Length: 278
Figure 1 (spheres, helix red, strand yellow):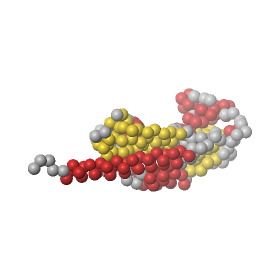
Figure 2 (figure 1 turned 30 degrees about the vertical axis):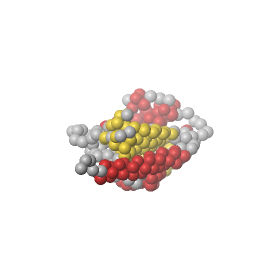
Figure 3 (figure 1 turned 180 degrees about the vertical axis):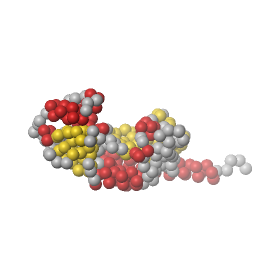
Figure 4 (figure 1 turned 90 degrees about the vertical axis):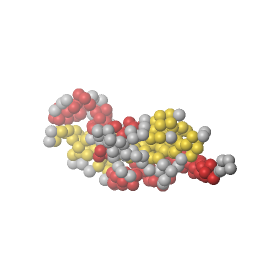
């Protein structure tokens, strides 16, 4: 048996504005993010970091300026080959000159993913985006009986009230269980659950972990997990095939749950109906 701490780790790194009460609410948020985001394909030499109101913004092809998130700024520093910590210590005007001298020109366009007035990510042409909402649409279709675990308990900190359903500027994470799916495995009772995650901006891979568990504590640690199945895929050209792969893994979990639950119910029913002695 295993102790799974992935959801526990997510719980303690998520701020209240990244939590969602239901899968539908999380799906709607991801749908809206996709609708208001757009890709730009400038050449590297067309990226123009420049100071504005005490910060460093990014101008594309001479167009309007975009603010940068912490993640997209990290990607810009990596693209230029400069230290993020060093650039953060510089005045915006000085930082702009650093990028002017370190961003190399090139013939291949860059993929700039922007929403409204800020840049969400900066990638090369080979990066392929998998939208959170597309992954969650599949989850809603094939895991209809699964719900989030109980909210995190009263810890007196920001983790209190964590739901298991999260989405921030860098990634999405979803923890679902079936509290009615109890079945017998080797003489003990287990219920099914899974984690699924993704990043539209390249922070992490897309993946799923399914399992059968005996308990989930208020800190979202999954105890005594068996038959744990892991799958991950990077955001390369065929990343959308991951949706079908994850769908198959979740579908097998659901099919196994149905078979085991029916057998478990029959055993319990028989035990309740059996008379011992006269």
